[in-house]
Image 1 (cartoon, rainbow over the protein chains, first blue to last red):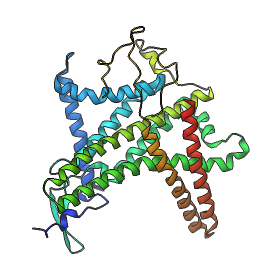
Image 2 (cartoon, rainbow over the protein chains, first blue to last red):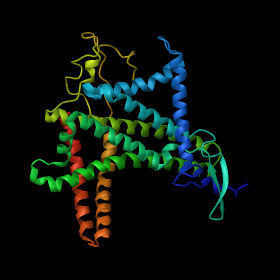
Image 3 (cartoon, chains in turn purple, yellow):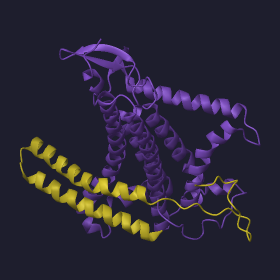
Image 4 (cartoon, one colour):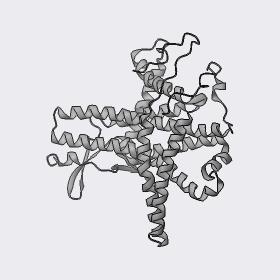
Length: 282
Length: 85
């Protein structure tokens, strides 16, 4: 048995390696990401197999977050909302379940004891994927390239590069280009650091409270972490949506729209619905 | 409580569902973090270049100035985009 309490508070900032498959080292946060994906895939597979026009309780529970985020994207995303709504909804669900996975019994608490610096520490088999900077940075990179991709799609490669690297007036380019690049890079780091920081801090807080007061008190903190996990997933998804909208809006502002209006593929969609400026930014 | 599309009351005239308003706080949260990060990125860039070229502290100072300028640019950019829409 480990020493009392000490090993419970032990939380490493980096994910612990479990085993290697050739050159690939599998960490417990990678296992967490795979478990999250499997949960989402299995639920989606089970529900879509039995989906009916009059939804069951399970179908309603699964459809609700999708429709809710879909409504937000539709209300804010302009005429091209259908092209990026799946991305935003997927990010929301994936981050939400990755955040909440860390709150399940056994996640972060079942593992093997190993010697580290002469101390016996628990290496859990599964760790919340969002508590690993590699995961959040990877997701932020996906989001980053998504809004760059939508910007390129809207402006064309030449137009996008011109907008990014050439200032107006042109003689300000040597000063404005590095400033613009720093500003763009801050989006990427801000997205990844915020999610990682919040989820990791939550895990440390829970581990500490469990070690100090094992009964009753941690329930309140578990409730808080449920809320924080939801809020962080929502923030990540909505910021991705905002960045994509801004990338497309730059195109409309410069009057060089080339992006095919995806609503043309959906004759049932109302053309005048987004004609007036939408209420708020994300 | 947000309603699902099927639950939302339709406009009597057009029969369309109303547009769902989107919360603004996400952008506010992001702006706060990006202000600090811009300065840190500029500083890190300056330190790395100075370490590489042995020009300490020239690029560190330039990096800090660029980072602060990027922070202000970020505010201006977010405000401009918000007002445009």
